[in-house]
Image (cartoon, rainbow, N blue to C red; front, side, top):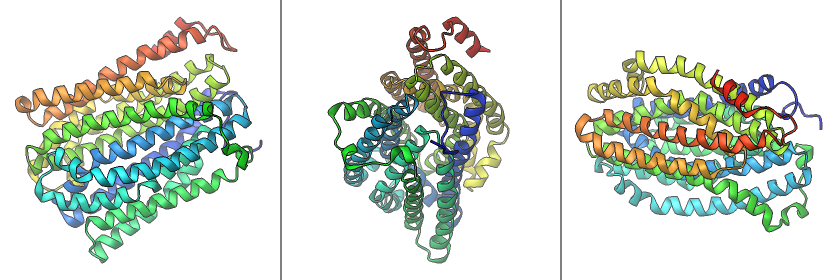
Length: 460
């Protein structure tokens, strides 16, 4: 196989491989976040704070549905990467074929489910009646086209499993330009309101999915035949055993966020607007560390499949270093410039002041979630998605408990405290799981590295 876009993580310099994989992945993820950010900024500046709050209010529900599909896609990617690392190309093709079959079923189910539950979910979140109409308009269009998002997530996860982070970057660059152009055209020229933003999102996802699929069709080792789709039950079991816990982890986390949103919405549109802005910035500034987690997942999966257990500790060191550097830079921005950040998205003084309470607190403590992304992805990459799933349950419980207890006492700051407690609890649980899973394997792998040396390296 001679394909420069595909990276074999089981050989060569771990730092070089991870960074080569990380930068296109980071640019992809940042562009995705950026166009989501500019998308809502166009809505806020073009249609006002109320429309901005309506679109932002959809974030938790969107994460519940899309997060489920994203987790499932990433979970499917783990056994695919393990097969690639083990150089078992027959099994690789069967697992890709099974992923395609299961994803098609998922798309039909999630489209029907999300459109059906949307009104109920909005009311359970205590959505203000002034926002309800725009939320429904936006939600029905986005969820009606959710199969486009699923298609992109699955195809991009396959490419990442094979070490290709460049094609998703190309897809996002093109789809971002299309999305922002359509946003401006439909909102400012055709005056379509939030429906225009929703249509632009669906169309851009279709474009990005098409680009990734075309790339997959050109990779020699995964040229599928009809026999590859005739899978044994163990293929589906392998995919589901990795995919479902990761999908449920995302959905459980989303439920906790929806409860936080419910409590926030009860305090009025100013709180809803501020929380929408804070969520956008939090997602944007967590992104580099989340991307290092994705790199850790692909790197770990391939080496775990190849039984190169000793190399996993090297990947851990590199990815944690990336997370720490991004924490210093982006955490400082959140602490030092909250008002300037708020003013980019919203205009009301009351919600801006609330944002100024939230961002500095999270900026100081975002290192916890930055490390969580890496450690949790390592656990998942070793084929153990259940501990991260239970850590998602812990996140949900902690978010709900903190927001419910503190919001009447400290106001909007309680939302920040809820995030910090969730990050900390999940990090501790995943760190324990990572050490317990990898420790016995280090004596079995091709390169025996003492476990205490791994811990010493990780702490440096």
